[in-house]
Image (cartoon, rainbow, N blue to C red; front, side):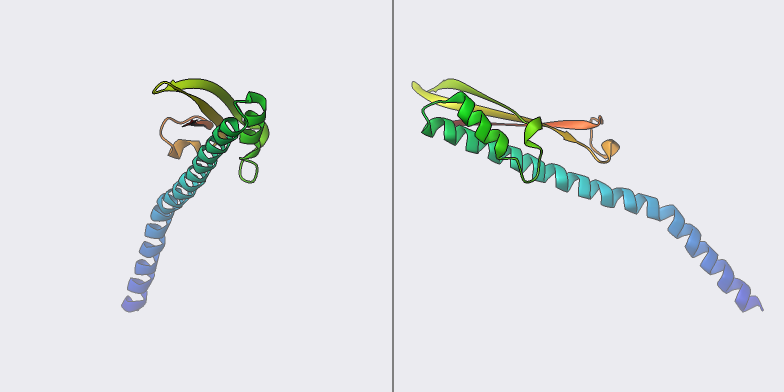
Length: 130
């Protein structure tokens, strides 16, 4: 009888420990997933910036065409309608270059796991090409 009481007490203790630990483990898991999505979106925005700058250099600085290409370059992962792409002519070592800046307001799934809080995080990338 004493042995049965000890086993019941031990299994109850295990259930309580599990109930205390599982929310922290779930929070860590979802934080890792959130950072993975954020990292993938940042890579997509950086790629869109490079594609837009390359298009601007190859087309001779056509801003509307380069901005449209940069907006469409985020299409598989992100919404192209939310992208802001700006093209500027810059001067690097006496030569004209094109600077493409792409910004995207990325909505956060779990806002409190990202430092700075908020419901969105603006991802920005700038590429300069000659």
